[in-house]
Length: 125
Image 1: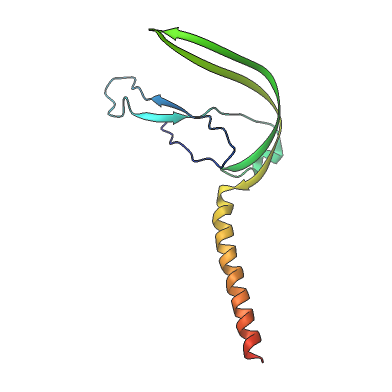
Image 2: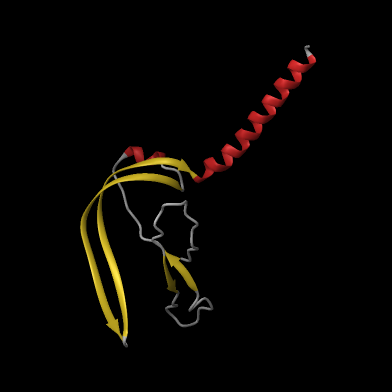
């Protein structure tokens, strides 16, 4: 599955890693093509999770339960990696990506209503 790189709001750490796709049979025309891999969190069992939007912004409450920093050298090239495991205590949706579009439409409707109200007030004078 191919993933594109997401543009994140300011202050967010981008967890995406570039990977090259490989075909199992060697016949795939997409072999060697770059895509972005994102880590996943899996939740189950809570009915309240049904209300999460398809995508958006959320705040998580967590506890860091493991961290590790490694330095590896291969073919004379040194690479540092950092890993962390988080225990997720809760998630609170803040805004869905769809709500950005809804806000734009609402603002236009509000502006139209204000303009109409001002016009009506002017006509009644």
